[in-house]
Length: 160
Image 1 (cartoon, one colour):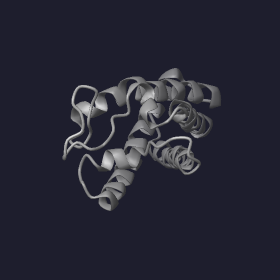
Image 2 (cartoon, rainbow, N blue to C red; image 1 turned 180 degrees about the vertical axis):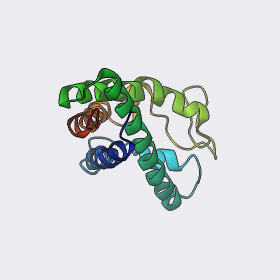
Image 3 (spheres, helix red, strand yellow; image 1 turned 90 degrees about the vertical axis):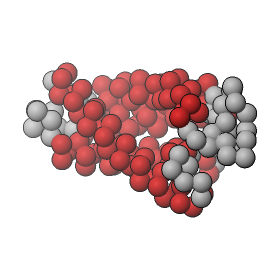
Image 4 (cartoon, rainbow, N blue to C red; image 1 turned 90 degrees about the horizontal axis):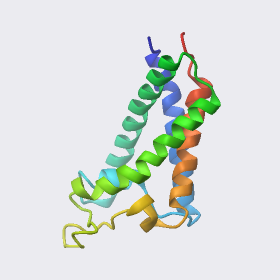
């Protein structure tokens, strides 16, 4: 049985650290990707509102995924930094390889490889591994997700 409170608590910390790494990479010019902004623009064309909506949605997704990690750790019967980091590596790879490729298909304001920019679809698609947002984007994204998983693996109390 999972400890939902622990999963959510440590998930909040892990999500905050993931967001910090991703935001810092933007500020340092290593990547142009902003997951909160991308998520928020699904619901609002206004940049300020989109960022607020996306930040909340990103936090909720981070908490939900933390519960998923807790389920995996409980299934394994143990957690740990290495197990969490490996899970984070697979999570980040899935986001980059599958998630970023699917995003333009359901994002109402994002162009795609098959459908160029229009007055409504002005956001650039991430492309394979989100490389359209900078050469370091895949590296930073993987690092952030490995950190997310490592924190959860180190802190989640399996069998509590």
